[in-house]
Image 1 (cartoon, one colour):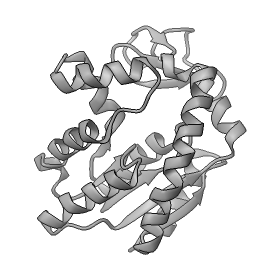
Image 2 (tube, one colour; image 1 turned 30 degrees about the vertical axis):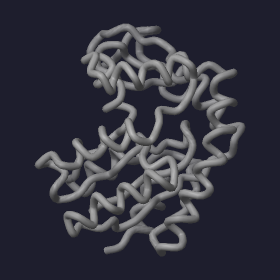
Image 3 (spheres, rainbow, N blue to C red; image 1 turned 180 degrees about the vertical axis):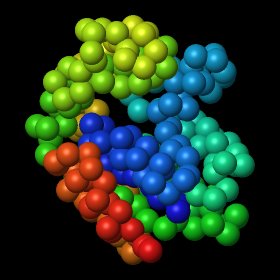
Image 4 (cartoon, rainbow, N blue to C red; image 1 turned 45 degrees about the vertical axis):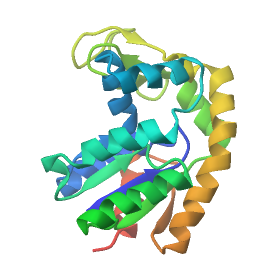
Amino acid sequence: MRVVMIGPPGAGKGTQARMLGERFGVPQVSTGDMLRDAQREATPLGREAQRYMDEGRLVPDDIVIGIVERRLAADDSGPGFILDGFPRTVAQAEALDAMLARRGTPLDAAVAVDVPRADLIERLAGRLVCRTCGTMFHRTFDPPATSAVCDRCGGELYQRADDREDRITRRLDQLAKEVTPVAEYYRRGHLLRTIDGTGSRDEVLRRITASLPA
């Protein structure tokens, strides 16, 4: 199963990608995680990505495409993948199609998770992330057992700079201009599945799996 998840930050793409990956036995490939790994390792791409993210801007296509292409070449992605956070632009979607065409492994679906803007802001502004293992929590919807401490590894929880409300609204405005063309790109290719992203995680997962090809 080869699926891309598209939509704004806070829509639940990461959670659903992880759950879909577990269901289908394929890896969740998160561009956000890969970018953060590159930053921690201080690779040239990581340092360049950090500069854009520190300014609250999106990382350019060429940097993201290079990171994704290397990841999809890994052995565990051979049987399939759930791609989370990529593509964000039509150029990225076209690059992904070209990568997969070279391997003869086309996409099965593009899932757009639809959530009202007010809900997105509430979700993002409450997010907390573990500095050690990257596990996400939410102050309201999924709080840790102990304030500011990761349930999984005991690491410190913090709020990312790009999850502050002023940066959230800027990102949503910018992404809205890009997500619509990407959705239309996949609509023209008869791959788009638009899913209501409100409700419980299990409810959203059922809607997504029901929309995918058998």
